[in-house]
Image (tube, rainbow, N blue to C red; front, top):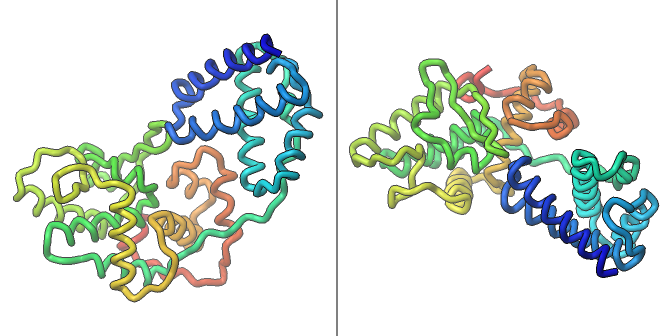
Length: 298
């Protein structure tokens, strides 16, 4: 028992280093993977007392059944299996095993929940509600316009820097998950609003390179963005469950409704796998596209 436990601990440490440094996953994702792996490890040691390289497919199937019997949500089961597969792929890459015992273990079947989508009129109203002739108002409207018209994640929005703006070419440089960079077209409306905001900002003589700053001259947080958006939606009279990610979902949906290909949307959103993007193909396409030029860059 002690010998196999030691092997799991050693392998787990190497795997953590791999997903953190080589896969460059975020700190939260690393902790989530390791939490799931430790649970799997405890199950295997308790039920079978084997080292990582000796795990077989029936053991993983029984682990998945155990998760089901414990009432775990299907999304949680699927995430656990994804982590197990990643772990055994790591063992294969390091020549510890010849094939992955998790390769043919089926994932739980469940229908995808379609994301909430705002109409272009609702987005216009929210952006307009945030607009005001103050530095904060110009920042908020520019920020929300950019969030939507570039389809950004919140972390991508808050990490934008002055040197990431290529307005002459009509692009911005976005740093996504795993520090991967991509060029994203930016609408004329977003460019105009950013330039108005920067004129006010320059008057304050701040030397900060981050584009969107809080009142103290530092970087905005996720909570701040969420609060700004919720307040703007309230002032716009929109009674829907809205988050910054709602803007990203709406952007992708409007692109597809406007004739963009699934590959184009994948590149714009920075999805590593097209399977992540394909959820938008199941959205209701009966809504007519009402997007105006200043929102969408294509």
